[in-house]
Length: 319
Image (cartoon, rainbow, N blue to C red; front, side):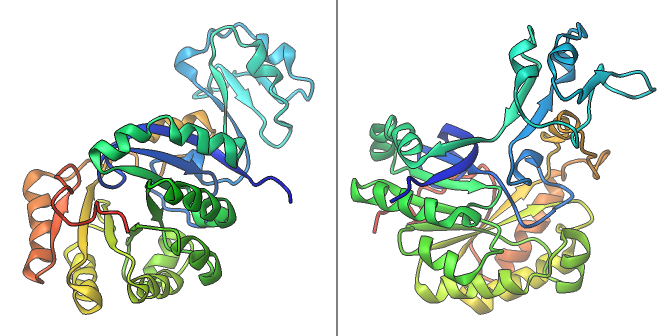
């Protein structure tokens, strides 16, 4: 039997925002959606990507000389970086990374075996048990690599580690079911409730997402709904009212976590040669966040803004 591998772009230890307790979050590369506000642009492509950090670059040209494909050159035009990467010519050989004396070039994405990831997770098993934490599979979209996630979760559950799936919900039902039977908690993203707007803005309609959420609830797996509050998109009164009405009809006992907007990932777009579409947007005021939260409370839905405690929500117990 072939060894399972996955493309991982980060393993974050001591995470406290991706489920209850102290957790290790494994970030899987590749996502079927294209949210213009995505805070992790390195998560979108399923392939390894070269990134250049302008602030660390010395402009010495060592990478340009080392590239056998001629994919790197000095920036000359207005607004160009010190080093410009032709990503169509780049073959991801890594010669530029080895040649850079300042560590300004790196890969996002590493092919790892299931044993390698599992061994990383086990390093903090004591913290999981003492804090009622565990492992979270995030991304990207972990369900694009469902066989790997299912096997990883199964191994973790065998030694008592709590498992959480952080998903955008856009996946085949068969892939979801593979993982769901080894999952203690689902963090499920809801964004735009209007199916036409969802397709226009994000690239896909929300039909599959809504179907999968209904399926998870029917299976009885605990769910936390997470809604990123994006100015002018998801944080409108109309969108949140529709979300609250849908959730109240589906299962009013579900907890909703509201995620205030931030632009922390904007620099990573530049590193990857991508354009950030929400430049100039700012996070919500405290008053706006209170208003967003009140919409769900009026519908009898337990709701918090990210950063508030999850410890007393009854979601930390292992099944």
